[in-house]
Length: 455
Image (tube, rainbow, N blue to C red):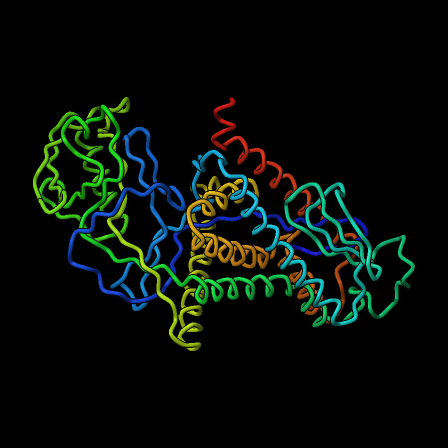
C-alpha cells in the first residue's frame, strides 16, 4: 500500500494476496491412539484439493498437527492460493459483508498508520481515502478530505506537497518532502507497522476470546460422503467409514498425506481391484473396490475424503501464557507468509496464477466466515501480514518503492533524484498495478461459481 505525494491519487495499495500453507504453532497435545468417527463435516474453511476427474473432493481444513514440533503445525490454510476457485455460491450475504468488512478494516488500519505517523509529527495531510477512482462519499475535517471511492483496490493518504491548488508555501518545513529523511521513513513505513501490530492484536483477541484450535490426529482417513451410484457406493463403502489401509499399506495419522496416498492409488488403478481396510463402528474389515475409469484413463471411486482429526480449543491460563500462545502463532503465520512469497518468486511461472485480487479475497473470506469464527481471525491476521510484506517490496506504487527512493536520496548525501525521473518511475508502476488489479478483479469474478453458472 503506498501513499500519495501529489494532488491526485496515483497510489495503488492493492490487495493482491497469496495465502497458502500456514504454519501456525499452537499447543502440544498427544494424539489419541484410537479411531475417531466424527460426523461428516458440512463445510470447511477452504478446498485445497478438488478433482472432478478423480471423483474425489478433498477439503483440507484448518488444523494443527501435534508431535512434529513443540507447538504443532497448521497444515494448508489455503485461500487465494487456489487456481480455478471453488468458493461456493455466496449463499450468505452476511458472510460476504463480514469478509468485505475485514478487508476494509485492514486497508483503513494501513492508511491510518501513514496518517497518524504524519499527523503526530505535524506534517501536512490533505486526503485520506479508502479505494480509488470516483468519490462515492466524502467529508472534510481539519483541512483533510476523507473519502470512500469506487474501486476497492486499496487506499491512500494524500499530501499537499505537489498540489498546485494548495495555499501552503512550497518551502513549508511541515510538507512531507521538506522533512528530514528519518521523518519520511517513519511515515512511509508506518502502514506496514500498523498492519503487523493489527495482526498481532487479532491473534491475541482470538487467544483470549475463543481460544486456539488444536487438532488431535487419529489413524486413517475419514470418508464424510459417498456419492450415489459411484464405485465406492456400489462396492459397499459408507459415509462415516475410516480407511485405515490401502492395499495393505497403513495410512499415516492425520494430515493430508493419507488423503493424497489414497488418491494416488485410486488414480493408478482404474478397473483394478483396490483393497481398503475400513473401520466402521467397532469393527475393522476389508472392502474391495474397483475404481471406474475416467475419461483421461485415471481411476475414480466417487468419495469425499478428509484427514481423520478432532478439534478442541485451548485457552491460556495466565497472561504470560496468552502472550506466549500469541507470539508462537504470530511467528508461525509470519514465517508462512515469507515462505509463500519466496516460493512465488522462485517458481513464478507455476505460482503466478495463484495470486488473487479483492474479489477472490472477499469470496474466500465469505467461505471462511460461513465455516467458523476461528478461520475469520486467521484470515484477517494472514491478510494483514501479507499486505505488510508485499508493501515492503521495493516496487513502484508500493511503500517499499517509496522507501527505496528515500534510501537512494540518503546514499546520495541528501540529493534527491530529479523529480521527472521519480514521477516517471512511480507513474509507470502505478499504471501497471492498476491494470493488474483490474485484470484480477475480472479474472476472479469470472471464476466465481455463480458467474460460471450464468455463462
